Amino acid sequence: MEEFAGFPASDDGDGGLSYSYSSSSSLYVDSDGLQRQIDELASFSDSPAPSVTRVLYSDQDVQARRYIKGIMKQLGLAIQEDAVGNIFGRWEGSEAGLGAVATGSHVDAIPFSGKYDGVVGVLGALEAISMLKRSGFQPKRSLEVIMFTSEEPTRFGISCLGSRLMAGSEELAQALKETFDNQNVSFFDAADSAGYKMHPEDLHNVFSKKDKYFAFIELHIEQGPILEKEGIQIGVVTAIAAPASIKVEFEGNGGHAGAVLMPARNDAGLAAAELALAVEKHVLESGSIDTVGTVGILQLHPGAINSIPSKSHVEIDVRDIDEKRRNNVIEKVRQSAIEISKNRGVVLSEFKVINQDPPALSDKSVIRAMEFAAKQLNLEYKLMISRAYHDSLFMARISPMGMIFIPCYKGYSHKPEEYASPEDMANGVKVLALTMARLSLQ
Image 1 (cartoon, helix red, strand yellow):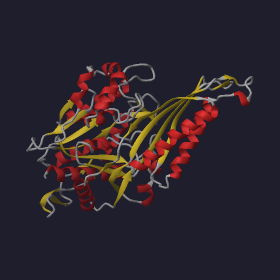
Image 2 (spheres, rainbow, N blue to C red):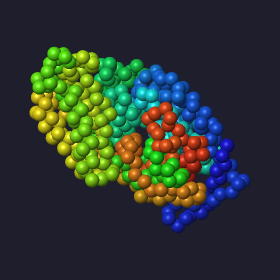
Image 3 (tube, rainbow, N blue to C red):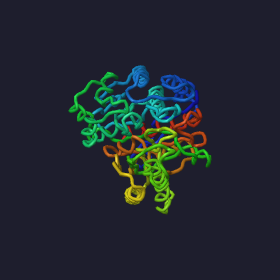
Image 4 (cartoon, one colour):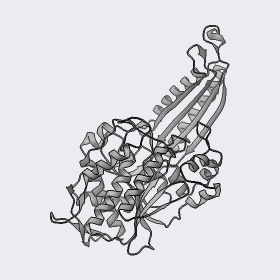
């Protein structure tokens, strides 16, 4: 186990507590145990190792939930679940009536992904709690670990489902009443199959009060190459980019690939391809490196080599730290879709913005606490922006928020090669533990 020594010492003059360190203190990161838990959790997968596939409310998801609750129970945490399966493990503080300091992430995994995305923020958080307990630390504000339901949009096309609801999204609560997966299974039937039987009105019980949490901090792999490339141990996140998702469908006439001559075609597939290139064009025209666009899904019907596509389905992801600039790109994509449909003689049967969320800023007091922890641990850190989607984006609506990034191999994520070293994970756990302890005592 890697040693990490710390205990409350004195006021630092900034309204918080300072910490001192000595080799004789008894606070450790159990790196071997953390890695073992990550490996065990990865075994709950619908795809073979080294990949991980763990989709919302699947049998593997249910087993993963049971595993996380088992660790929470071992740590003596008070466990609760809400209607959609957000899981809470709470260590009661001496002043439990105060807003809690929360941390956590998700354990669902997109098809054929890796075993660290989200998982480090759940199992790492539980190790941070274990570490503080072993040290004899006594929290003033309660400390809480949250395992959020369905951060990934894999099954129902809705990302951060659990944290969105916690943040009070009435729009989502209504939409879930008519939400089905690609097997035509309703959200409520899927939840029921996983043991979460609910009435639509129960979704309002998921909404969290704005004074429930004093702060929320999420530990996460960077999912990008910057920290590793620059040799920096910790990323202190100052903002999360504003994401948007768009669904587009074109309909053409179809026909035989040999019999219909090129001038007579109304090809829905080519309309989709042209729109994909238009997305790239409009993103690059924004003039900012922070604007990104991705066509992650492009489906053609009937999907036969000798048949002209009669229908196409496109899903587009556009992100930026500047909401106005991102929205300008979305509008340009909309205009391109209209123009393409006219020029190619196809019908633009759907152009729907699924979500268009604002960016989130980390709270200055939480940033200071994370920076203070990194400095106390003699870890080099960098202030940076998260361009990936996280549950923290929505927790920021109900609580002061911050994120801690650790390096990951070549920036890989959402693929089996995703990897974070035990040393980097230990650094992240240390910063998280110290940040939570500091905020808990305020």
